[in-house]
Amino acid sequence: MSKQKSTGELAGNFGITVQHLNRLVDAGIIPKKGRNLFDADESIQAYVKHREEEVRKEYDKGARTLFDFEEEKATKMHYDAIRSKVKADIESGQSHEATAITELMGQSIAATRARILSIPNSTAATVADLSDAEACRKVLSEACREAAEQLADYDPSAIVGKARKDLLKESEPEPEPDAVKK
View 1 (tube, rainbow, N blue to C red):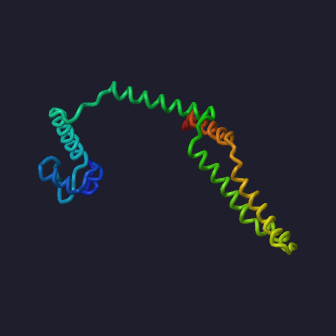
View 2: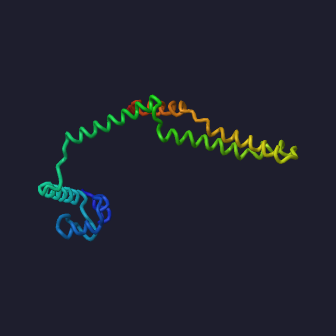
View 3: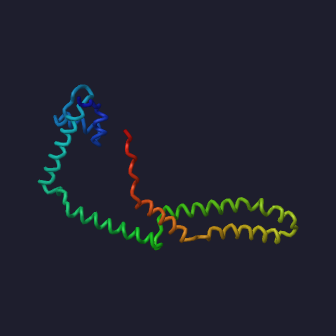
C-alpha cells in the first residue's frame, strides 16, 4: 500500500511551493486522493512524467540541451586535476589549508591573550618596588613586547605537518565493518 502525503509534504518532496502543487492538481497533472491527501507513488510518477515533458519541450525549442556525457567527463577531469595540484602543493608545503592556518592562528592568539592578561600579575611585584615612572614604563613595555613576540612565532612547518596528517587520514581507506556473527 502506498503512503499518503499531505499537500505540504508532497510539495516539500518535490521542492516546489504548495501553490505550484495546487496549480498542477488544478491542471490535472497530479491526482488528488482526498481533501489535502495524495498517493505518494502515483504523485511522484505523475510529477516525473510532467517534468520530463517540460524538459523535452524546452529542448525541442532549443532553450535547453540534453546532458553531454563527454563534456561533463572533461569538466570532472579538469577539476580532479586542480584538486590533485592543490593536494600536491599542500603536501610540499607550498600552500596551506585555510583550516590549518585558522587553527594555528587561533592557538597563537589565545596564548598571546593569556600572556597579556597575565602581565598585571607577573609585573605587579616588580613595579610596586619602583618609584620612578620611567622604570615602571620599561618593565611594562618589556612584558608587552614579549607577549607580542609570541604572535610572531609563525611556524610554517607546523601547518605543513598538520596538513600532511589530514591528507593521510583522507586517503586511508575506510575500515570494513565487522561481519555480523550468527
